Length: 279
Image (tube, rainbow, N blue to C red; front, side):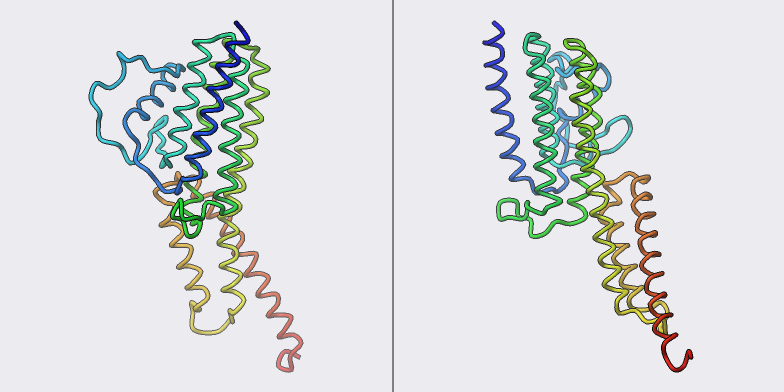
């Protein structure tokens, strides 16, 4: 019985991993609409802690897709792949309800599929491997980056529900240990995206400040160009990131700008001190 259950679950997992890999390789990392069944699933999970919505509670009529997914009064702009992954995670958890004997394998497999998404999306977005004819992407934009970030934050939201669910069948410490590793990997990935966003702006500032001279017009062309890029960044992310995360990003950019400006002024002082007019 145990062997049959494990074989069935292994086949189930292989199909899910293959499907995830296929849709990830076609993901264009642009915001997609949210069909009502996904919103209903998320609401059911956060209300009941269960992952299988009874047919009696499913919406009788399909409603118009929403622009965002609402989770605990927080809005998530999402890409299509993460919606499908949430649905897959729910299926793994439901299988644990149906086949208690396979709970340990299912926990391992749900962690594997989350890790697969985490590592593959890092490769595709941060390492820019999603640029292809298949996706239609010609470059990775800041919008693509923050959508990838929000997808990870949505997955982090569901992890505690997975922990609670599998703790019904397995030792809580065992469940927490394996899922905490997944959480740590995703948290590091989020930091990598935040660092990448800061680095993009940093390179623009360095490039512009390399030609800057402390003389009229004020503001200089370099400062105007930097401000223009910073404003464009805000336009790209304002509807995707929560306000507090935008503030965090811009505080980092402000610190980066001050550090670069300080270095530029220091170089100017050193140059002028060596000149005949500064004696």
